[in-house]
Amino acid sequence: MKTKISLLFGLLLFVQAVFAQANTEAINTDPSKRTLEDMGYRNESITGIAGALTYFVKVQPRDDLNNMKLVLNIKPSPVLNNRISAVTVSLKDEPVHTERLAATAIDSVMVITIPLNSRFVQPDGRFIKVRIDAKMAMSDEFCKDVDNPAIWMSVRNSSYLAVAKQEKVTYYQSLKETILEYDRISTPVNSDLNDLLSSGVLYALMKQRASLVKVKTDNYKETDTLGNTVVTGLYNKIPAVLRALLPEFQAGQGCIANLIPYGDNRHVLVITGKDEAGYKKAINVLTNYKIINSSFSYRMIIDNGAPNYFEKNALPVVFSLEELGGTPRIMEGVGALKTNYAFSLSDYNAIPKKLTFHLEAMLSLLKSGDRGFLNVYLNDNLVFSTDLHDRTNFAGDIDLKPYLLTKNNSLIVEMRFHPQGSICKEGFANFFGFIDTKTSNLVFSGEKVNEFYNFFNYPGEFRKKALKFVVTPSLLPSLSFFHGRAYTSTEYHHYTC
Image (cartoon, rainbow, N blue to C red; front, top):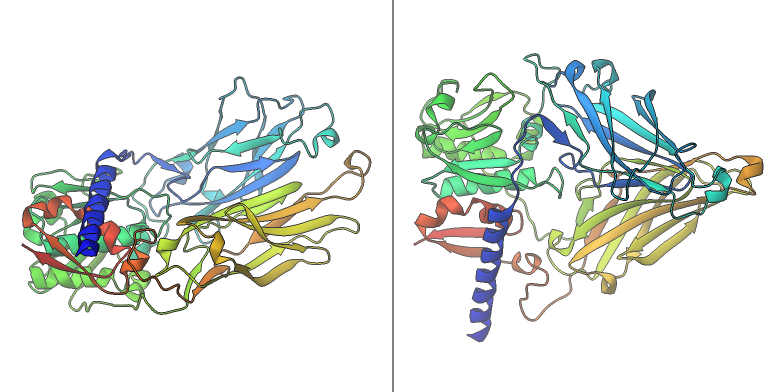
């Protein structure tokens, strides 16, 4: 009895904490800006006398690139010698801007604005390759600052695309890609269990874009004007201005449509059905990865939609670095080049007996006499190191010690490069490395058995059996955020009272 009471009390505290987070989150609905943070990037730094960062900035189908700008927020070390320190920005490997690095105050941030053009888009039409090169020194000669930790600059993830839109579509997105462009979910003020289920599935999909994305939720009335959100609800609950733009469909059918209802930059994705049966079909489609990844239409009428289930408890569980929020990035420079990947034990079903990091990377060939090392750190503990001499790639499995794990973990891959001899006399060439986030992965196998349930590994400890949520109907409109969090974490059943 005591155990049950403690578990209930813990669940109540968790719900309270989630409500507090939902109510205090900052809301950014400005459609004219798309930040690097929105795209899943963290603040990135270049350390040492020379280095480079590479970003693949995603563009959307209706972006008018000829009228857009890339705004970079760069924070340089305040001790840099601005006479010989400079940054160069290249688009699609073409240099377009060079500027001296100069800090006017301790907290100063340089703002670099670069006009864009459609010719800078990659051949697939979906990305712009942005490369930022820096050469820096504090002394009058670069070679004197090779190992100086005060030599650095960072690119803030507050950097953004200043967005302009056009009617013309440059490429077609899949339904999943369309959903990932949103970060807000709107449910009716008189929500029911189907609305709650739909918002939970949508939340789970949106969080796949990157762990940094904050998904907001709100409620709407039939008379509200909604923009830049996913609207889910029965047909008769959807605002009239949106209903008028939906294609004709019948009872028993569902509908998913991406709309531009007001003739400006505001978009609305509608998930609906003429009746409960049709609405459930539309919701079920959202759970089917084969459909949402292969559907490239902005309007779908759904006649059949069976729910798609998957087994969460099957072992081993494999997550690629891309699925954990890692983004493709070329590391280039001299000295220590690091990339940080974060993961949580809540990504898994239990505390692991064994966790294996499979790493695949490509790197430049070292010259005779150069020294290079690949190091892997788990929560700041060195767990692997190998020499990179005579190698142009690395592929291998690295065992991560379970006793080093915490609830939230940091996995750092470092490539350390030291050129031969004196740089002042012999010059230097940048070293580069690339980690394949698609083929590199974490493999969870085995399970540490716990006699008692505990919240250290929530929700992993609660996945083995379906949880039951007892919900008062009057609270349903306010539970979308909590329900979405629970949906990404557990298997469950609904009950109302």
